Image (cartoon, rainbow, N blue to C red; front, side, top):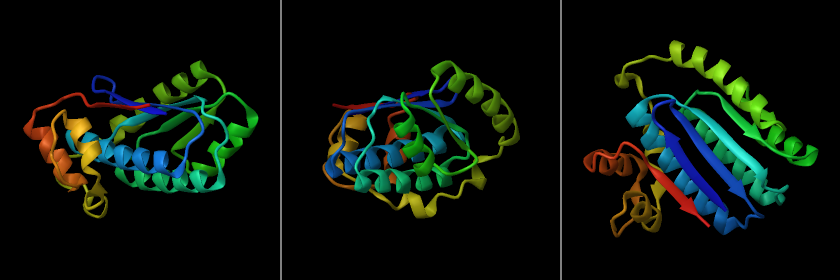
Length: 184
């Protein structure tokens, strides 16, 4: 269904999505994405995102609306460029509608997306070198993350829902430099 991998050397979040999603899958994706984006931003600063949607068909309207909300929230967490790769025109049109922002671009060719991200990320990363004291995540840091997702992310059971900021503190406490999360 989805997988996340953050490359801390390039500061690129890699996301792979596949299959037809239900609202339940969307809820798990949302909680995971917002928690990982928040903790990654707090740990590494701004980052770019490369989304592989080549095995992700056109989604139902409710799921597409939820993905649009996630895109809006993630744009407030990091201003890095986001490249999405799809395989067909309908999927590209849906992705373009969901991610209507200058920092988002949709491609049908993987190499073209990677080249654009490399060009954009070098310039954005140079312009975004700011001290951590300028991070403003208060509204998003209060979002609740389900305990079952926190346990998977931290490789230990926490036992209760936590604010996303607390998840970041736990990851820092465990001194984890690389966070990966997969849901199938």
